[in-house]
Length: 290
Image (cartoon, rainbow, N blue to C red; front, side, top):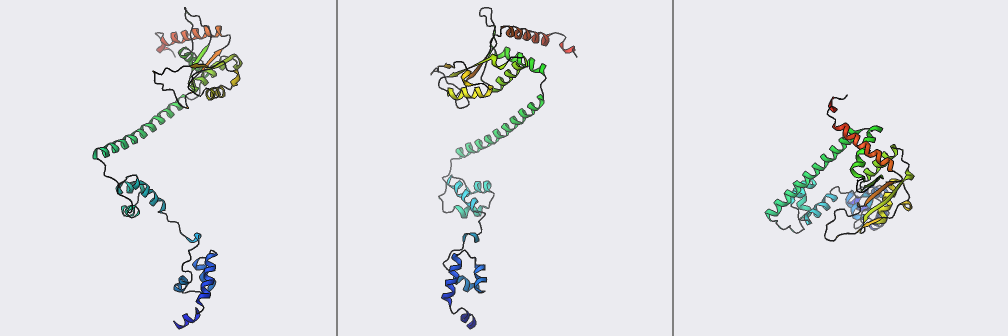
C-alpha cells in the first residue's frame, strides 16, 4: 500500500494529465497505457467527473424499443398489447413506461368494436392481395395479341364506346370518347392497325369546370403524344349542385374525345365489321367449326 501511495504521490499532476487525455478523446484503456496506471480505482479517480468520449459509448439496442413502447403507452395501449407488438418482455415494458399515466379503461363494447375493426382490416388486406394476384394471373393469360385479335377487339370496343349513325341523325364519322387511359391507348393502337395516320386524328377534352383543366389537358396530350396547342376547344361541364359527384380529385381528368377526320367510309366499314362479328358469333353451327 505504501508503494502504491508513493507511486501516485503526485496525484494532482497525474489527474491533470489524465483529464487532458480524456478531453482529447482517449478511452480509459488508452489513458491507462499512456500513463502506465494499472490500478483501476486510481484510474477512475483521476478522470472522475469527465464524461467518456462519444465513440466509447455502446449503443443501447433497446433504446428504439423503449421509445416505441412509451409512444404506444401514451396512445392508451396495455402492457399485453405493447408486449405482443414489440416482441419484448412484459417486465421491460413495465420498467420503460412506469412513469407514464395509466390509460383509461375502455368500455367493453368499445374494445369489442376495436377488435372487430382490426380483424376486418386484416381481412381486407388478405382480400386485396388475392384480388391483386387474380388480376396479375389473368393478365399473364392474355400473352401476345395477333393483328386479327386486335382488329376484332377494336371493332367491338368502338361499337361499345364510339358514336354511331342513326336514321334520324346521320353521324357517319369515327368519334370515340373515353376517360380510361388504357382504353384510349388500345383504340389508338387499333387505328394504327387500320392505317389511320396520327395527323388525321383530332383531340379535345370534356371535363367538369371545377377540375384542373390545364393539368388534364397536359395529361392527355402526353398520353397520345400530341401538342396541347393542337387540341380542340375544351368542353366544360357545369356542375349540378343537387348531385353528388364521384369523379373528383387529382385522378379525375375528364374524357378525351378522338375524331378521325374524313372518316365516313371508315365508319361504314366499322359498322359492317361489327355486324359480321355478331353474325359469326351467333351462327348455329359455330361450335362445329375447327
